[in-house]
Amino acid sequence: MKTTSVMKPIHRALGTSILVGAALALLFIAAFVFPVEGNPAWGKLWKIRPLIIVPLAGAAGGAIFYFLRHLVYQGGWKKIVVTIVGILVYIFGLWVGTVLGLDGTLWN
Image 1 (cartoon, rainbow, N blue to C red):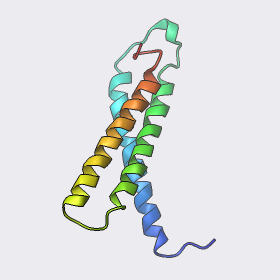
Image 2 (cartoon, rainbow, N blue to C red; image 1 turned 30 degrees about the vertical axis):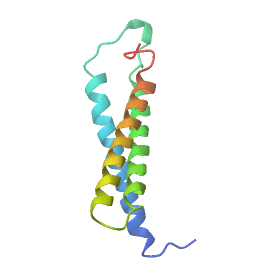
Image 3 (cartoon, helix red, strand yellow; image 1 turned 60 degrees about the horizontal axis):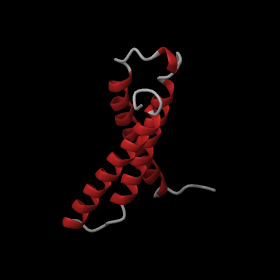
């Protein structure tokens, strides 16, 4: 299927939102994971799980934020409310991803 010139900016903007969400989540979890030595019972590679799960949750949150922002085409207070809801959804997703990523290690 051939993509039109209208679809390319939409895909690019969605990809940018996903990358920004994942990058913010990676920075967030790296601040928690890298300074910690870890418990020998967790294994040597315990840091891999949170470094994968939390950025995936951040990427999903970035995509949801993108779609929420584009649901409202009018400006003004509606766009502000949708932006605030999108940020809260992103933070909630980041929290859930952090809990899933750190379960059994730092979140015990």
